[in-house]
Image (cartoon, rainbow, N blue to C red; front, side, top):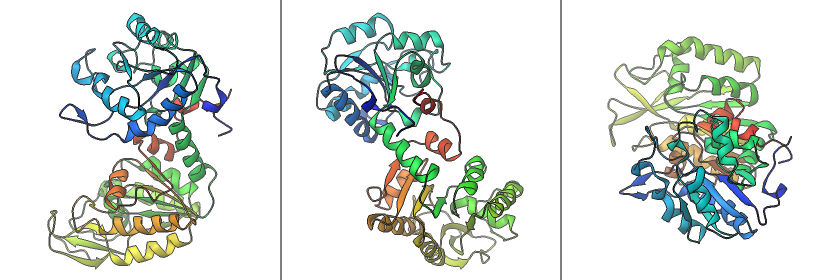
Length: 398
């Protein structure tokens, strides 16, 4: 982490530390239904509190339209946050101004205060300098622990860092270290496994990866588009036929970059998309006109297993089939299991994230067995696309 400031670079004792978190967590019946993001944030907050800081938490929540409303109040996550950090967290009724100051002044060093939703102010998403300065006036130091929001140049993710000494929190640090090891300074050979429905949403991602990795394995609906671009009849499968030229361009870039493109050898196909549908395994060029490819087949799993056996680093984004319903989860489960096994043996660095990836790997029962799984969606994808993330750039050592 020589390129970025971390908590280790800050003297926080007796200081007020503003921590940008991502508490935009799922809710059900008024309660937090998945505490993953809160649990991952807690170590940063408790470490700062134990070091004698007043810890002030900033976050967005939901998509408020016209200022404050009860549904999008961060008060909804207060109990879950208090439970995660093992102390009662105070609440500020605003994220700037007198109400925020009063909440911070009302606690002692070692306490944690959660301020109200930053997006209750329209200036937040506009990255308004005056609003960022208002936030900065509340603290002495700024820590960003919201990698999942780092691709947004908002006042609380990027603007504040212009006015205060800034550093990465422990979760942000873990993300940056994992991604740097996986793509910026990897141990080779590097393999990327990319699945999902469409290549149209992942053109930048694929275009960047083929220049950086040694092998690119494709699955899901996007693999059908690549096969179609090679003249294969994919029957009634999901396929973006209008993206064939782009697929061919990516294949040419891969060839020029010495990146081996690994396409499915066979598929599990069915005539209807439903759990338990009658299905069969067919070669990639053996899909019937009324059949859909819904998962990679056993020969593909064997093929990828052999290829990945030689890899030292694996980056994974997206499922290889319709993993949400059985029996079309088999391919994703099997290949993820192979990656997890090699990781457990110590021969592989495996980093995954983005979109359905976390759910797919959890379904496969391997989420604890990868080296690192990012809970960040858009930010993880933009990093894989090779883009600069404003919230990360703001933490670089000057």
